[in-house]
Amino acid sequence: MTPIAYGLLVAATSVAPAPAPAAEAAAPPPTTQVQVTQMLIQQRIIIRVPAMSPPPPPPRPIKWKEVKGPKCVPVSQLAGASIGQNDTVDLFLRGGTRLRAKLDDDCPALDYYSGFYLAPTPDGQVCQRRDMLHTRAGQQCRVERFRMLVPER
Image 1 (spheres, rainbow, N blue to C red):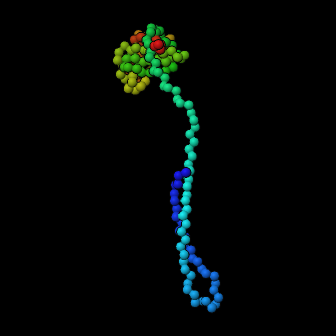
Image 2 (cartoon, one colour; image 1 turned 180 degrees about the vertical axis):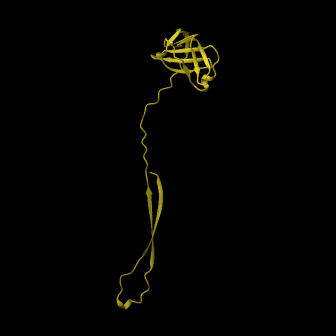
Image 3 (cartoon, rainbow, N blue to C red; image 1 turned 90 degrees about the vertical axis):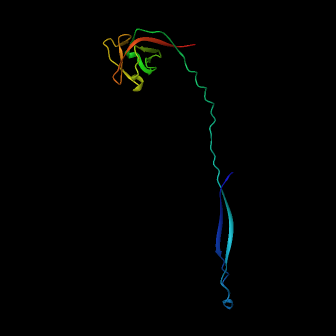
């Protein structure tokens, strides 16, 4: 236990003698006595830490290998995207498939505003060498080809 505070209690008390008989009425006035007492205040704080298993090691980063991809992708299958370098966009499809869209030219406005738009087509697909990604800054970047991304072993 760790003492938190020490206190010293000093109390001044007046001690009055018992009433004296009338003969001793000329007695001196009562005296004041000082009584000193020491008081020790202690406090204990208990912090409970639950036992946990150590966290698992972080997963190794996955290296992706590009293989031949499809010519067109249904827009309904697109689940998300990640902007790579200025000339690539990784597309995440429903079901876990990943595609890399290689753009025909450097498209620096993609990562500046972190996003792009796709113009709807009558067939509901995004096709290589036909469709364009529209950046939020107004630039257009044509999809040159799709490459499928598979984990490298």
